[in-house]
Length: 339
View 1 (cartoon, rainbow, N blue to C red):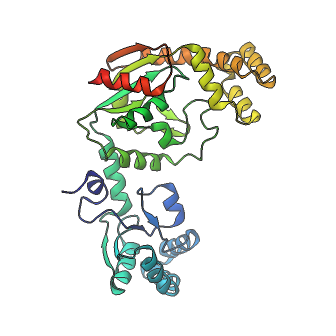
View 2 (tube, rainbow, N blue to C red):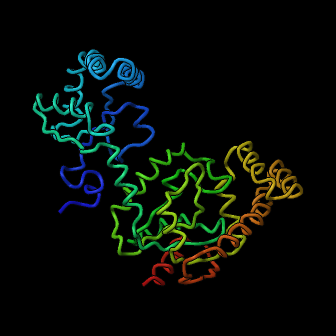
View 3 (tube, rainbow, N blue to C red):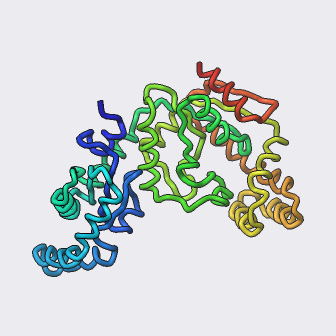
């Protein structure tokens, strides 16, 4: 039986291992199938050149131009693919499963490889991703105020064998004005969706999938419409921990980061803090009093959290008030409540 991941990629017609993406580097960077290896048939400049010939002089001359570029590379393609794919079984794709993937597939078949072409190419895969993200999924939202350690609780739930999606991890952003600090560059929205769908294929959609409470926008990532609508309607559990524990956690999470990054993050929420609070927070930051900075910010973030709670469409399954902050203990309580 084919896995959901195989069905998502190619309807189960060929194994999803050894996936060779022959699109240009720029195309690949905008979005690709997780796990695919990029081996461009054309560089970005070469692709643009062939495209220009196609538009100005037609397909026949564009093919000739493409052959001029690819011809000298043929032996390298075969040699490199033998090294990359020693079992010589490859699923090849380009944008639409057209000339680029067909050309590479023909060449490798002549060299003794067993290849197949992803029908419809990356374009068809993207259509399946969007369809797949429409669900339905049995999501349960973990809701809690800023600094309550929801991401750590998610990871602890995963250690307990639960199905978990870490949206902030996939987005490379912690969601707040400070969320980009210490994080790698965010993926494109397209790649975020690909990665999200790829993780969801590992799970049973009929069983609970825990997910952290998020706004629709995580840094530069906007959640896909259908998946976001499921999140809005999903049932949720909420919990709180003592404020001093929240302050301690946030100081530990952000205290070691660059002063200027922290300052700019404060300025970005300055209008919401109000001029006096912003001035006080900046002064505290300059004095190295991070506890006061955090306390000032929490006034704003708690108001935002309470407003978000009032707009929830799902049912509150349980509400906890913990006098401790250990994510493993909280995760166990959440798991027990689900059962």
